[in-house]
View 1 (tube, rainbow, N blue to C red):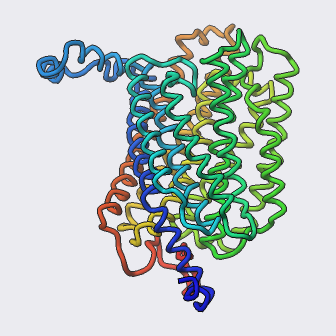
View 2: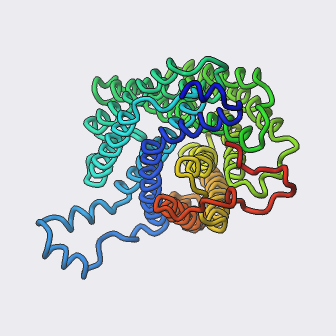
View 3: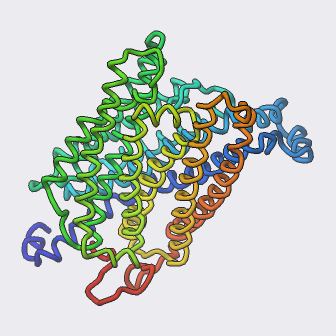
Length: 512
């Protein structure tokens, strides 16, 4: 076999190598993608319910009487009461956050990372059974964890609501992935280490450090007093910046050059952006505690680090823009590029907005308002989730040997999610700014707390409408993915494009 490979042309040899790598990744990567999409739909339902309850508190406060009657008749005693209590905002909202972050975001990112690791290390996936087992274990933890949250077992610590026994399951699963990643990296073929590998390996090192440290210092061996608040925000902020962000940037740095068929604009800008992110982001989080009973130096250090994050963000934006320069026409017809570029642009906006929110003057208005919620959606959804969508559109056909069934479903997915998230962020930002201004001026007779709550309702209703739009996109995406798994994809005719290329030289994602 090795002799045959040596005698083959270089391009054919590379194509065969990629085919072998993709075949080795098929089962574990599709497992992570399938379960991630399942949790995405579940999390979207939770999020929509929680959103509706913010302006209509009596929405689904209990099961319909006819359904409750039959449920009481054929289920154990207390089942109806347990389900009704699980429908309260205090349980649905953390279930939404954890389902989206740990059920969708983490498995989707891990699926992309596994495929990228194998492709960039240029070796077939090592120990695929171990990786699949880690995926199964992770989802067992998710089922147990969401069940605990809905039954009232939350720790009430944002981003760390899962009980300690669930945390242990997730940590073991992630440890298996991290050990596997180190083994893959050690056994990679000699050659250049691409920038995406830097981000993936860093993320797989940073997350267990963040997750383990935060759980130990808050739950297992709790720190005392206000220190817990510092640790909580350090983890919550860095989970986005040192876990989801590196995975999203790793995918963007791979997908953009791959689809347009040209290298990244600058290796040195890539390196500079990576090390600047590693240096500055780990100090973030404390600016969310401005005004709290904490040392002034800690808050000031976090503010400075947040502002300094402008450096890696601008560097990365320049690198992506210059890589795309002269190829923006490909956005018309490449599904992968359209999602990924949308996400990359959102990364720039979310990061610059985050830096501005560290200034005390703006923070005084936006803190404790819906403005902060809009910012988190801009980061975790408009940036990270959209890049994951684009990556999945690129990877799945290479795993299954079939192209996506319908360009129409991809268009529905993109436009509903794009319009939905843009509308949601704008509504929450404007509504949150008004809310914050009213809270800052209590001397105004119209700014009683009840009046402020009423003033936010139109913005929250708009948020729910945009959430419905996003739900349509997610259902279209899940349905389309299911069709692919059921072998309804096309095996001939080239990649599924959103429009016809302008010339025969344009490939719109057909690069292997």
